[in-house]
Amino acid sequence: MALRDALAKLLEGCGGSWEGTPTELHDLLAERDLAALPDRPDELTKRLLNLARAGTAFTVSRGWRGKERVLRLHQHHDPKPPNGVGGVGAVGDTTRVANTTYTTNTTNSDRNLSNGVGGSEIALGPL
Image 1 (tube, rainbow, N blue to C red):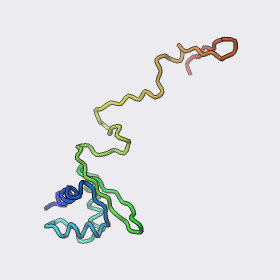
Image 2 (cartoon, helix red, strand yellow):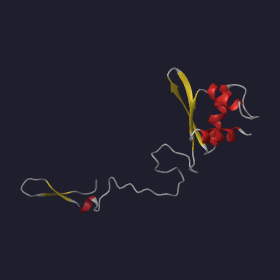
Image 3 (tube, rainbow, N blue to C red):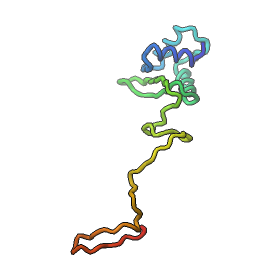
Image 4 (cartoon, one colour):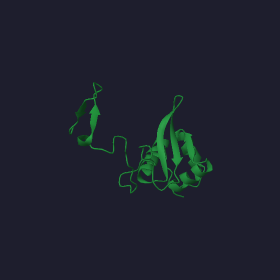
C-alpha cells in the first residue's frame, strides 16, 4: 500500500484529522502493511510535507503539544486546497469576488461637499 493511501485510511478512521508526534505516526503506519514507510520518523515527516505540497488530499502542519513537536494532518474532501486567504479564491480560480469596500456611485469630479459654514460648497476635483 502506498503512503498516500495509508494516510487517507488513517485520516478517514480519525474523522479527517490526526495530531501526534512523528514517532507516534511512524508507529501507527508500521502496524499497517506499508512497503513505502521510511525507516525513521524524521524521514516520514519530510515525505509527508512533500506529499502535502504536491497534492490536495491532505495538509500537514507542525506545532507543539506541551514540550513535544507534533504533526497535524487534515484531510480535505474539497478538490481545491485551502489557500490561507480566508476562502476568497486561489490564483487562477474562475470565481470572481467583487470588493466594493471603497466604491461609490459617483466619481470624485461629480461630488460636492458642504463645509458646514453658511452652506457654501467645495467642489472636489480628481484626487
